[in-house]
Amino acid sequence: MSLIKYTGVDICHQEQTILKDVNLDINEGEFIYLLGKVGSGKSTLIKTMYADIPISAGEATIFDYNLRKIKRRQIPYLRRKLGIVFQDFQLLTDRSVQQNLLFVLRATGWKDNKMMKEQVEQVLDQVGMKTKAYKMPHQLSGGEQQRIVIARALLNSPQIILADEPTGNLDPETGRELLELLHAIRQSGTTILMATHNQNWVKQYPARKLLFNQGHIEEIE
Image (cartoon, rainbow, N blue to C red; front, side, top):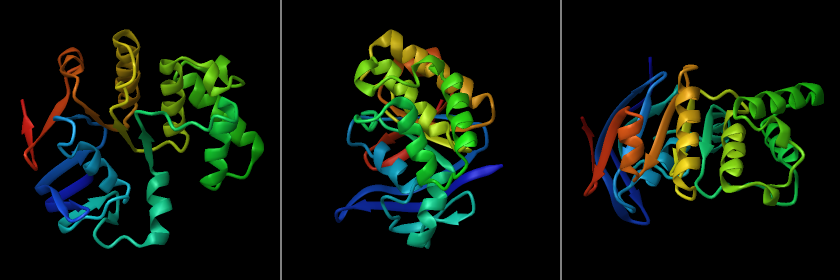
């Protein structure tokens, strides 16, 4: 089933055309690498998918949302169906791991405290961090913080995870563990788009590849 479809899409940012004539068809349960140099448009494409950057031309849908016509009030509902993993963690430094995750659940409409705590426990277990719920972010290693970020992305059981250079700040061994975790999550049916410029991951964990080059995106073998 097609979750993301872009046809003839142009993407501009600050009056500059970043990507032209983008054609994508992304299905349920796929793992897709977004490859290319820094500044080639990988992050820009990801930002259009959660309606942070508008689409200038063409047709673009994600789930049942038309990204050309999406209304401001619809954007929070779209984002609840996505899990977003940033390179720089973006955890709230003044509260514990559990409090970080509870904050997200409250912000996305959860009300029942017992159900929220159960959900937090479940996603922490899924990423191998069940014993770290009461730690503060500064007490965790970079790899542990990124696992918490992935747990945060899983809180609302998203159909798609958008991961923007999630291993960029990690050592190779920790990065490999993160890759294995993301591929395991994909096996449960979640679609994962991961921006990276690390060719080693692509060789070690093969999947579909999209190359960003000179304003265009092409599928490569």
